[in-house]
Amino acid sequence: MALEQYPVKPANKLYYGDNLTIMRKMSAESVDLIYLDPPFNSNRSYNLLYKNTTGLPIPEQIEAFCDTWEMDFEKSELAYDIPNIMREYGIQNDAVQFWYYLTLLLKETNPRLLAYLVYMTVRLIEMHRILKQSGSIYLHCDPTASHYLKVVMDNIFGKDNFRNEVIWHYTGNSVPKLCYPRKHDVILFYSKQKEFYFSPQNVLIPYSELTERRYNHIDETGRRYKISALRNGKQEIVYMKAGKYPDDVWDIPVLRGKERLGYPTQKPLALLERIIKASSKEGDVVFDPFCGCGTTIEAAIKNQRGWIGCDIAIHSIKLIVDTRLQKYALKENTEYEIDGIPQSVEQARYLFESDPFQFQYWAVERSGGFCSNKKTADRGIDGRIYFEAGGVLRNMVLSVKGGNVKPSDIRDLRGVLEREAAAHTEHAAQGGTEMAGFICLNEPTKAMVQEADAAGIYEYNGVKYPRIQILTAQDIFDGKMWRCPSVVKQIRKDKGQSYLAL
Ligand SMILES: C[S@@+](CC[C@H](N)C(=O)[O-])C[C@H]1O[C@@H](n2cnc3c(N)ncnc32)[C@H](O)[C@@H]1O
Image 1 (spheres, protein in one colour):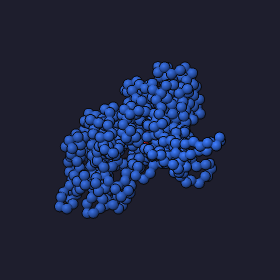
Image 2 (cartoon, helix red, strand yellow):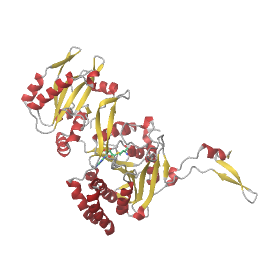
Image 3 (cartoon, rainbow, N blue to C red):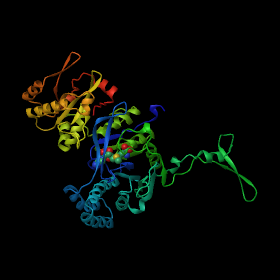
Image 4 (cartoon, rainbow, N blue to C red):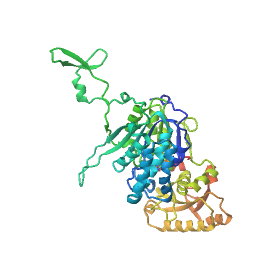
C-alpha cells in the first residue's frame, strides 16, 4: 500500500523516560485508548541481543529491562501516599480503604509483591486520569500477577467498568511436568465509563475453509450462501457473514520469523491490531506507556490512528525509529516527535544526573557503538565499536564518564585496553581489541590528552590511528566520530552495527 495512505497526526510522539513522570505532564482525558504491557513481576530480567546481519549474536548484550522488585524507601513512601493520591483523583472511599489495608498486609507478608503493586497502582491512576470518558484500557499481564492487577483495576476503574478478561492463547509443544503447559496471557479490558467506543464488527474473524465450503453457492454479486432445509419442508437461503465475532479467548499465533525484531517480550502485530480496531476510531490517539519495540505504534500507524509511546530503555526508542517508523518512512519533527533524548550537552548532562546508566547507553550508541550489559560486563568497558581490518572483525573498547574527568581515567582505560588486547577472549577470536575510546561530558584536560597520546598508534593499511581516542559530548553533537579503519556506514551495512542520531 502506498505510504501516503498512512496519514499520521501531529499527536504522534515517542517519549524516552519513566512513564510516570511523562504521564504526570499529560493533559487529563487526552487519549482514546491505552494498551499497556508492563513488566509482569516475573522476577527475571530480559536481555536484548544484538545480532549481526548473519543473525549471530554479537557478544555485547544490554539489559532491555529488569523485572525484579524490591521494596525500597521510595516505594514505601509511595505505598502510604497512594490513598492520598486516590482521594485527590476522586477514587471511591472503599477503594482507598482497600488499598490501605492491602499495604499493611503485604508489607509484612509479601513486600516484593507490594513493591510491584505500588509501581503499577501509581501509574494506573495516571492512566485513568488521561483516558477520555469514551475510552478503554487493555492491561496485558499473565497469571503471575493478573489476579492482583484485576483487584487494582477494579479499584481504579470501577468493577462495573470491567469488560473482559481476554485470554490470549498461544500454542506450541511443551511436555507437562508439574502442571499443564502455560500457554496464555491475560488482557484485562476496562472502559472508563458505561458509555464507551467499541466496534467488534471491525475485527471479525474470517471463517475457516471448511465453513466456507458449506456455503457452496455463489450469487451473481459473488456472495456465498447455502440452502438450508426448514422443518416445515421449505428451504431458505442463508448468506455467509463476513466473519465471526471474536470471543474472549483469542487464538493469535506468537511472533513469526520476519516479524521478530529481537526485542524480548515483543507482541504480535495482529494482537494489537485487533485491540486498536475494536476500541478506537481512525484519528483517535492510542497510548502505550510501556511501548517496548513499538508493536502498538505500528498497529496505530497502519490503522490511521494517532499514537504516543513511552519507554524507559533508550534502545527501545532507537529500535522503533530504526524499524517501525522507517518502514512507513515517517519524518521526525513533521510526522512524529521524540522527547527526552539529549539534543544538547545540557540535556546530556541532565540525563547523566537523572540516570547514569541511560546516559552511558546513550553515549555509546550515539557514538556508533554497542553497549555492554550493565550487570555482567564492565570491568571498565561500557561498550565496543566494531570495525573490519584484515578481513576480521576487530574492536575498540569504550568507556563513558559523566562527571569530572582526570588523567587517571585514561590510565585506567589504557590498562583495560592492554588487558583486552592480550586476552584470548571471544573478541580476540574475532580479531581482538586494538583501540580504546573515552567519552566524557566535560572537556578533557591537557594531561588527559597527553596520557591518551602516550598509548601510541594502531596502524592498518598504512593509515595511523591513535590507540586511545577521546570524544566529548559536544564532539558527538558536532558529528565527530571514532577514527577506525572502516567507515561507520560500512560497518553498519556489513556487520549489522546500527547507528542512529539519537
Ligand atoms: C513487556 S515490554 C513491552 C513490549 C511491547 N509490548 C512490544 O510489543 O514490544 C515492557 C517495556 O516497558 C519498559 N518499561 C519498564 N518500566 C518502564 C517505565 N517505568 N516507564 C517506561 N517504560 C518502562 C521496558 O523498558 C520494556 O521495554
